[in-house]
Length: 86
Image (cartoon, rainbow, N blue to C red; front, side, top):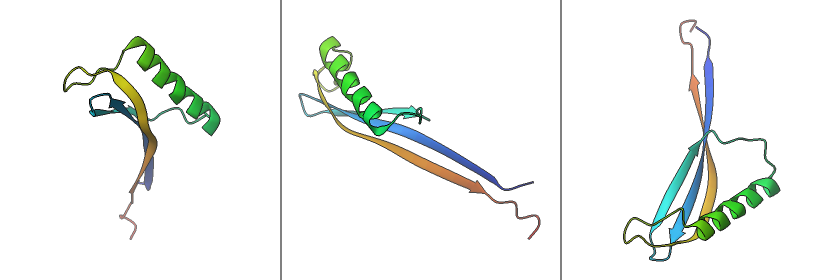
């Protein structure tokens, strides 16, 4: 068996609500072809859409969406080594 390297990433968007509640939206293996400017624009558009259409609602008291407080991409690389030849 050969060595295997597996890389995955997760986009995490933290949504804030007017009552102080937060929720994290996680998207596995987001498209990596966006430039930083395109990515920032897409997040702003998403926040604007959520606020205008009230699609995100806090679960503590049904609070309205306020803003996106953070966005990050977390990458994880797993190396499986073939130790049969050692």
